[in-house]
Image 1 (cartoon, helix red, strand yellow):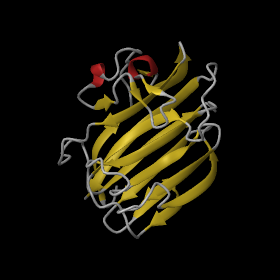
Image 2 (tube, helix red, strand yellow):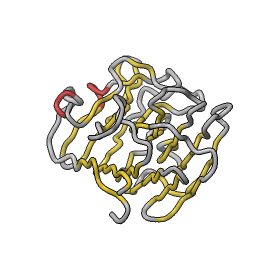
Image 3 (tube, one colour):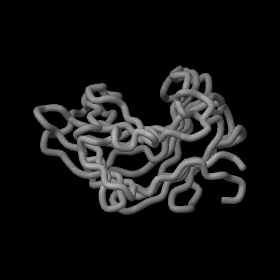
Image 4 (tube, rainbow, N blue to C red):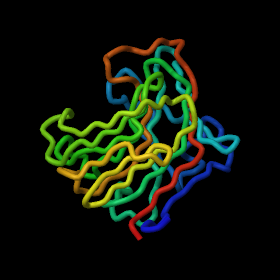
Length: 229
């Protein structure tokens, strides 16, 4: 693409059954470990019970077993990333996705600071939203005082159809595109440290606990990462 150089892409053409992710694709993907709690602690990251690849898609099967609400957080391994966390100072992150409207769950696919310092080093989220709701974008500011120290951009788009979401991060701006349309742009107090991409699918932040019967699939058709050319 003009102005960008592709450094990572995955069309998920290989078949990886549940139980084999991320071991079978460890050269290109990692995941939060089995048993780690999600943000609210109402869900548990269980990639071995959630994630598979088949028919050209990455499939996150969100469901509950024995009272454990199983979710996942997946991290692409970016070649040439300067740090051990696969983070970049600037980049273009694109993902094509759709989801069943699974009540009690959400995406917060985000750029997270390699430093792990939050809210001080900020956070960038897109697509973020409840899976039975609408898609939004957020920039949590550098030197943030709390999680509410942020820019927010909303859309009317639901997760039910295929969408392509793009984060473009440079030193001067963060831009969000959904299906080639600009959703929002931030230019002040931008996160300034190296950040890594996490496809984090988890329980909702409203404090409610998902029903044990709530289940469905979050599908990813492809992902691509670019650095400035």
